[in-house]
Amino acid sequence: MLQTKAAGKIVHGTVLGLLLLNLAIGAKVYSESDANSAANDPHANLDLFVNVLERIRQDYVDGGELTYEELVHGALRGMISMLDPHSEFMPPAKYSHLMDDTEGKFGGVGVHINIQDGYLTVLAPMEDTPAYEAGVMSGDRIVKIEGKNARNISMPEAVDKLRGKPGSKVKVTLFRPSTRKDIEVSLKRALIKVATVKDINNERKFTVGENKIGYVRLTQFGESTARDLEEALRKLEVEGMKGLVLDLRHNPGGLLEQAVRVSEKFLAKGELIVTTEGRRENDKRESSGRSARPDLPLVVLVNRFSASASEIVAGCLKDNDRARLVGEKTFGKGSVQKILPINGQHGAALRLTTSKYYTPSHEVIHGKGIKPHYEVKLSTEEEELLFLRRTPGGLKMVPENQRESVEAFTDPQLAKALELLTGEKQLQAKAKPEKEEKQAEKPEFKEEPTETAKPEKKPEPKSESKPGDKPKNEAKDKEKPGDKPE
Image (tube, rainbow, N blue to C red):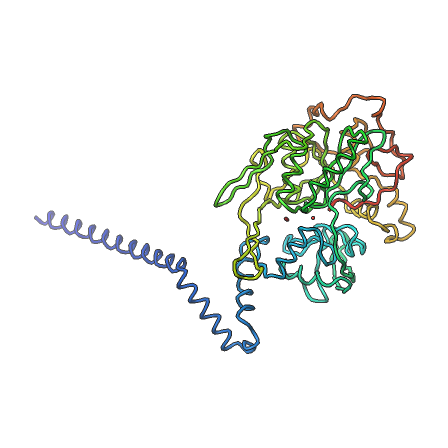
C-alpha cells in the first residue's frame, strides 16, 4: 500500500514537473514570438521613428534650423548604409551625378573611388583628368578632403566633396601605402569627358605592326563602350589583326549591359555570359552572336583593381575557354545594384544591391575575384614605373637621374600576353600558370608563322613591348595601367 502511494506521488510529481516545463517553454516561445512580432511590426516602428523625429525638432538645440526633409534624408542614408557599402539613398543632386557619370560627362577631379578595408581608396584615376595629371595612383587612400578627416566618410559624401563647378579647386591629402607617406595635392576641377576605349598610345588610332597583334584597353564600361570597341576592332581587322590583347587592368566596372555586349563580341551565339541571382528573380545572359569573333586568339589582362563589369567579362571568357587571363586576381566586386527612382520625390532614387553575379561555371565573383591562368605580378616599383610611362608628362614627375629607369621599363604582363599570342618570349616574365595550364596551351593561341606575321625580335633594353611593332621602330608608350563598382 505504501509502495502504491509512493509510486503515485512520483507519477504526480513527474506530471507536475512536465507541466511546469511545458509552461516555461510556452512562455519563452510566446515571449520570443511577441518580440519578433514587435520587431517586424511596421506601425509600431514607424511610430517610434516619428516620435524621435519630433523629439529632435522640439528639443535638439539647433532643431529649429533643421527641416523635415534633411532629417528624413539623413535617416534614409543611415538606414541604407547599414546594408552594404554599395547601396545608398540618392537625393536628386546625387542621382543627377550618377546619370552624368554613366553618360561619360561630369564635373570633378577624375577618380574612381571605393571603400576598401575601411579606407576611401582610389580604384583608378581617369585619364586626361586633374587627378591623373597630378599623379594620383590606384591604391592611394584619401585621408583628408579640404583638411577634414575622410576616414569614416561615406561614398556619397566623398563624391559630393570631390565634385563641383569646373575651375574650382579642392585640396586632398593622400596616403600612399607603397611609400608610407602622405601626399598633398590641389586639384582643379574640370568637366570630365570619359573615353572608355583606347589603344596602346592612349589614343584611338588602333593600328598593328608586323606581328599583327592588336591591343585595346577598356578604361571602364560606359554607355558607349561596346559601340566604341566595335569601331576599334574593325579598324584593327582592316589592319590585318591576327590576335588581340584586351586590357582590363584598373578597370573598376560600370554598366552590366555593356559588359554583356562586350563579351558577346568574342563568343558564338548561345554561349552563357553571366547569371545574376537574387531574392526576386534569377537572370541568365547569353551571347547573341552579334558581331562575334569566336575564333580570334585573345588574351585578357587583369589585376587587383579590375572590378565588377570587368570581372564579368574576364570570368565569362575564362569559363568559356575563350581567352587566357594574365596578371593578378581581380578585385572581387560581384554584386548587382539597381537604380530605383522614387516616385513623387523629384529625382531621388535608391541604388540597391538586388543580386550577385555568377560566372558561366556558377562561381560567385563577390568577395572571391577571378584568378588568371598566368599569374604575373608587378612590384610596387613596377606599378609606379608603368603609371609614369603611361601618364602624359610622367617623366616630369621624377628627378632627371631616375628618368632612364622609366623609359627603359617593359610591362611584364603585356609581354606575357604577347608571348602567348606570338609564341616568342618578350622578356623573362615570371608567370605562374594554374595547374590545368601546365600541361598544354590551347592550339588557338599558337599561330602558324606566315610571311606577314613574323615573330617579333627581342625588345631593346630601353623600349616597351608594343603590340604590332618591331622594337627598333617602337613608339614610346604613354599609357596608364588600365582604368573604373560598379
